[in-house]
Length: 221
Image 1 (cartoon, rainbow, N blue to C red):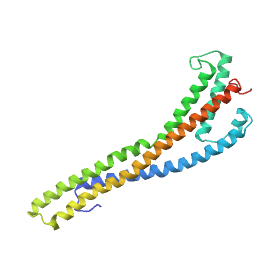
Image 2 (image 1 turned 180 degrees about the horizontal axis):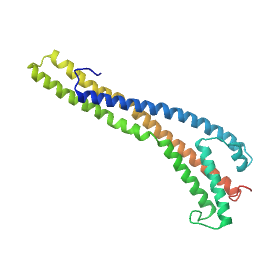
Image 3 (image 1 turned 30 degrees about the vertical axis):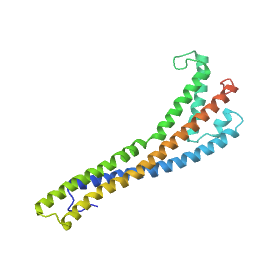
Image 4 (image 1 turned 180 degrees about the vertical axis):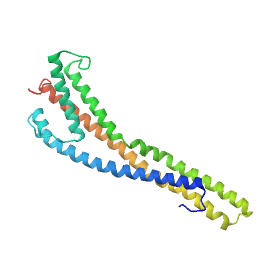
C-alpha cells in the first residue's frame, strides 16, 4: 500500500510493480483472446482443407483464412509455384536443390515465423516473473532501512514504533510475489502451448509435403 510515510524508494518500487502487473494481465488477456481466435481459424481451415479434392481446391476453399495453418499452407503453395517458375526460367541460388528440398525449406521457414509470432510477449512475462520478487524485496529492504532510521531518531524501539514502518515495508515483498505468480504461470502455460502448436504445424507441413509428392510437386497435376 502507498502511504505518505513510505519513502520515495518504496513508493517507486510499488509503482513499478503496479506497472508490471498491468503489463502481465494485458498480455494474459490479449494472448488469450488471440489464441482463441487462432484455434477457431485453424479448426475451420482443417475442415475445409481436408474436404478439398486437391491443393488448388483447398487454396480456394481456405481463401481469406488468416490462421497459422492457413499461412503455412499458403507458404507451401508459394514454394510450389516458385519451383515451377524456376524450372521454366532456370535455376537460381534461392531455388537450388531438388523439389522436395525447396518445399521443405519454404515450409520450415514458415513454421519458424509462426513460432516467433506465438512466442511474442513470453519474454516480457518471463522478465516480470523473475524480477518482480526482487523489486518487492528491494522496496522491503529500503523501507526497513528507513524505519530503522526513524527508530534511531525516536530513540525507542517499542512495538508501536516498529510495527507500522516495518509492516509497511514487508508489504512490498508480498506484492512482488503476487505480481510474479501470474506472470510465471502464464509464461509456463504459454511455453507449453507454443510447443504443442509448433508440433501441430510440423505435422501439417509433413502432410503437405507428402500431398505435394503425390502430384510430383505440381499444382496443376
